[in-house]
Image 1 (cartoon, rainbow, N blue to C red):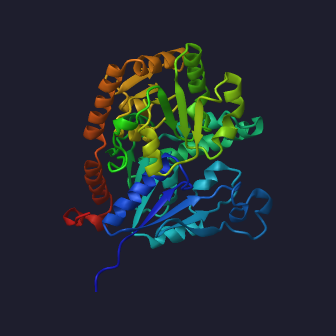
Image 2 (cartoon, rainbow, N blue to C red; image 1 turned 45 degrees about the vertical axis):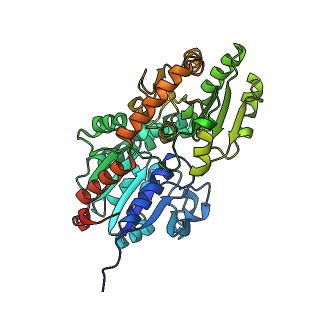
Image 3 (cartoon, rainbow, N blue to C red; image 1 turned 90 degrees about the horizontal axis):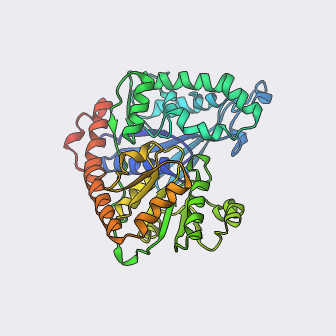
Length: 409
């Protein structure tokens, strides 16, 4: 009888929208091409499913953290898992009984995440793991912590922060783990934290059948951004200020945003204050085919962020031949090459507006940068090369896959 398929457990975050679910979906597809089945598991926030966790008032009640099984994508099962003491952020990464059950049942243990902490659940079990990481812990949440009320900031500074930093260092230094990053910037940051090199950089390749140029639909002066722009790290007010300055100069700029379910409601006051209601279009999260069709219209992709591990959506735009203007915020500095693929600017609205204007008002410059963006993607984020490199990392991490090189995907 043929051997049963290998089973992979992927420790991740809630698979809704954004860069981490995009990475996870690609990884699941690549594992399936090798005959490996995947199960996703994640900490389910207490605010979403309080019945799964055991907060402090119920600590002596006899309750235990529970799990809820739910499909994620067709034929891909998932488990939402609660935690002990969800008030304490570091407890979200403990290997509770549901996690230990899933770890024991899996042959391969992987992580797709923003920061490295989702791998902490594997440490006690001693299993080898491959983690594909977007950013250090502090970069992933620094802007979010600033929005906390004073008592949560105090708790974070005195308890959560110190414990989470130690947990992150343990993950990065674990000999059982192999750490892949999504950008050279992230690799450098993680190496400084751990004192050891990472396994390398793996850019998520956009689907070439979807994300490709279509010059016939491009609209001059239509610029865009895709991502969870309600996240304070995305610094969307900076982009709105730049658009306002361009409109005041008489430029016909239009801004298109995608990635937030209630984006129009979220931005209502900001748009009204800047008199931008008529020039900003807000889409919800779009599936890849719809997102590609929107991006192909754009003259320019703009990243106004305070911090980015990479910005996967910018690579998707570049695959459509769209140049990128970005603040200096980390990961985008890997691929936004001034004069070649786009422009880098400081975190100032006049500088951002000037960079947008320079490209959108000069079709020849825009075409030059578009060609450069496509060339960079072909050299650095090719789907076939990404698949080959992933398989090498899988084989190097998991002894069960040492014979994988001879398989066809």
